[in-house]
Image (cartoon, rainbow, N blue to C red; front, side, top):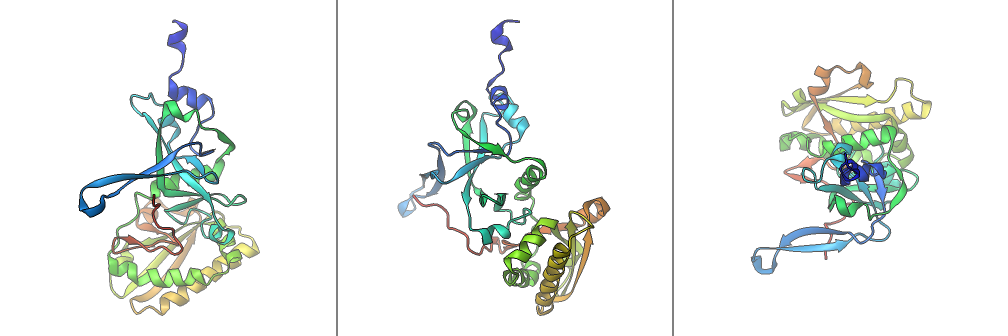
Length: 285
């Protein structure tokens, strides 16, 4: 075999250089490109904005896609990341939003699912790494978060209306420090598919926690959140009852898991729209 034949292709070279899913990169000269209606309704035009100096990028592509030959997977997908306020980050711990993901609590660095950049593999190596990557449980949650954006349940509008306002209102009243403890131990809140029979609705929530052995602060935070949700839901004329079951993943059967769908805390879908609080508008040129 000749030396040239033994040379790994660009995907292999990127992988060998440390490019992985979850790698944090500096922005360089990249631009976020998007399409908008042309003035006067005359077709579509393309706009762009540069990735700002304070922003960062995180690799969203899976490792196997990075390793794939460029004729099969020519691009690597990146998400734009920005620094957010600490109180906003507290609501993002644990991946409870499908639009934002908290990459690092200390740096307050948040990935934005709706701002994506595709870069040719041959150009990716020109980007400079920040020197750190997601790993362990955080990387696993990041991968699940990327998938969740495309598998959100399509509940009837009236069913979502039954709990959307009460749940949003309850979480807005919870202190930041309580949310931090809650979000670190609760990995998912799911609602039973059978709950969609109504109105009025009998809501059944499945709350998945990382461990049975919670600290006093963590257990108190979970109780406070449950009390707040129950109080808010009981005031809804569309809700007949609300029950909460707490499980660790190891105790949750596959049947029980798939008989429910995840709900998110900041952006419950209603009438085809994401109900966002404090969200920025799409970037303008």
